[in-house]
Structures are given as structure tokens and as C-alpha cells.
Image (cartoon, rainbow, N blue to C red; front, top):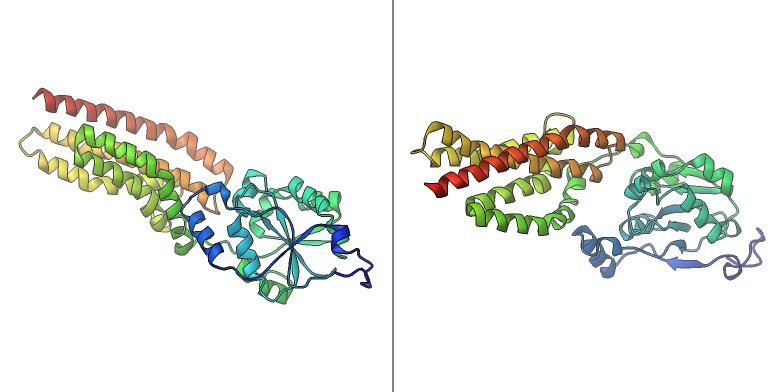
Length: 339
């Protein structure tokens, strides 16, 4: 931007600090994305908040808004290839747009503050910001315009649709559609596995010492069913609530263990064989269901009120099942050692 522009806008050095970036991402970004996907240094994958330029933007160039999570920032800029524009990066503490909107960091106050800090009004002649649709829950568009003078316009759900959005001048119904396809769910599995790795290892060792390899395997299957199988099978599991879906998945995951214990104690009385089988069906499903409940935070179609309702409805059931299962498990251990 030059001082002799017909718009009369000031030079960048005098009006605002603008960082230059590019459309392309390289090996460094790829490494960062892999580490972010597996949950390594989870909150450390961030760029500095502020105003960025891509290409050779001028006073009339569009301004896109995103989070300072590297995954969000890189997805946006790589989709803008060939577009001269500005990117206003909000300080969301390294959290992606959708999650940050729910937490409030991708919100009205931060957006208004970032507009003021970057002196955006001295950089562009228009007063329009293009925000990602998934950030809408955190931003009051009317309040933003009232406080900053900038009008909020929501772009498509996915960054890859931005070129078509700019070509049409609006988002089509297809661009507004929020999907959660198999690929979207699969990319979440590595970070979920990382999150449960330590407690899973501790629980596996503990149950292995108490009940042997069979018990250790049951713990591992119950946890991994919630972390791996649940995201994959989510659309096909019956019922609406995530917790009940998890219970159903947990029941089926526990079924082989129940059958093995029932058949394996062929010489015991029928009630004892049923007790051994029931232990698996009491202990494993609530573990899978609890992990499934936590997965609500990874999906784009849950609400806070819905999650709270699930917590109050199903957590007592999970706790009750675990307590009964633990009592039965300990009782059977005592019977085994007394004999």
C-alpha cells in the first residue's frame, strides 16, 4: 500500500503493523499439523494474532477473520491462492475457530479489540469482514458493527469453498451445510488416543494385576471402543444421545468377554457363571459411554444444553453400573482366592 494511493490511506508502517504471509504451506507446516493432530503440545500450535497480508492487497481487498490455531490459519490461507487479501487473526489461545467460538475466545470482544489494535480502518476503505460460519456462535454481528463500524459477513463452512464463495459473491446452501463425514471423524482419532493413553496404560496395568491378562484386555477394548470405534460407527449407532450410543457399543464390545467367561467357568454353578459374564457387561459399557459423551466436544452438531442434559441423565447411570460391576468383580476375586 503506497502513500500516494488515490484512497488517501497511510503507509502500512504508519497505520498498522501488517505481517506478510503466503498462500503456500511447506514441510514445517506439515510437521506442525501432524503434531497437532496427534495432540502433541496441544495448545502450542498457534500463530501470532494480528493482521496479515497475502499477495499484494490494497484498500479494497477483502478481509478474512480466523483463529490463531495453525490448523485454522493454514487451512484459510492455502484456500486463498491467487487472492490478494488481508487475514485478521484473533487470539483464541491456539484453539480452532469452532471450539474457540464455543469457549468465547473467538468472540465479539476479541474481534472488536483486534480491529482496534491493528487499526484496520486505516488499512482498508471498506467496512466488511468475512468470518467462518462455524465462528457465528461466538460473535454478535450487530454488536461488532455498532462498536467498530465493520459489518460481519459469514463465509462458507469449509475454507476450500472460499474461492467459489468469492466468485458467486455469496455462500450457496451447499456451502452452508455442516457435514461430519467419516474422514472428518477419522482425523480426530489420533488426538483422542493420545488423550487417553496415560490413563489407559494405568488402568490396564492395574486390572491386569488384579484380574490377569483377560481383565487388562477388557479395559483396553472398552476404552478403544469409545476412542476408535465410536467415531467410525457414530452415524449408524441407534438412539440420538451420544451416551446411549456409547452404552450400546459398549454392550457389544463386552459381549465376547461375557461369552468367554461364561463358557470358561463351565464347571461352576449357573449363577456364578452368569455373575462372571455380567461383570463385563457392567464394567465395560459405562467406560465406552463416558468416552462417547466426551466426544460431543469434537462434533459440530451438539449444543451446550444437550450435553448438560446428557450429563445429568446418563452419568449417574454410568456411575451406578461401574459401582455394581466393581462390587461384583471384587466379590468374584474373593471367591476365587478363598477357593
